[in-house]
Image 1 (tube, rainbow, N blue to C red):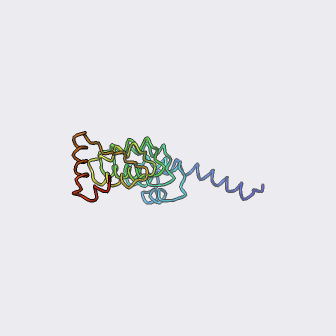
Image 2: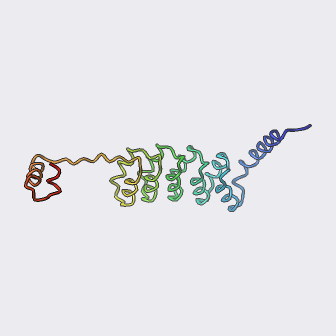
Image 3: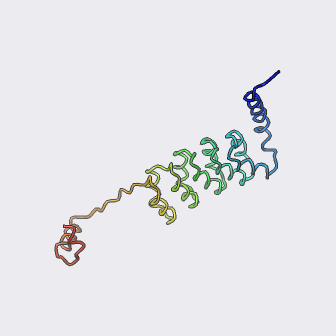
Length: 177
């Protein structure tokens, strides 16, 4: 029987998929790392590797751009903060997962959330008051952040400011009139 090149490719892919996915966890540590760093690795293989007992393997799965949003959502609850850090940085991470990671106990994870382009303005608004200055700094750099801070003055403060401006003691303030 004769096969076209496309048919041969399909057969090879099918066989590789059947072999790769179930046996991937039995590979050596080095081979697992090589797979997780492969830019052409399938999301299915990454899903299998996401269950590996070694946190470094899970770390690289979280970092891989082919990792599915579903796998990233699962890895977002990983006990290892380095895994959660890379989940927060991955552009495939769902908005809801980023929202959850925004309350992570590790400030490095929260810093990764603020630099993710998918982080919502609402989450950024919350993180703008984070206790960690690196998180707050990152919020200010995120293009999704829209500061809604306005200057609210009591009538007494307003009148005092108005008197200062009108007194002409400060030429910059005078120019505001």
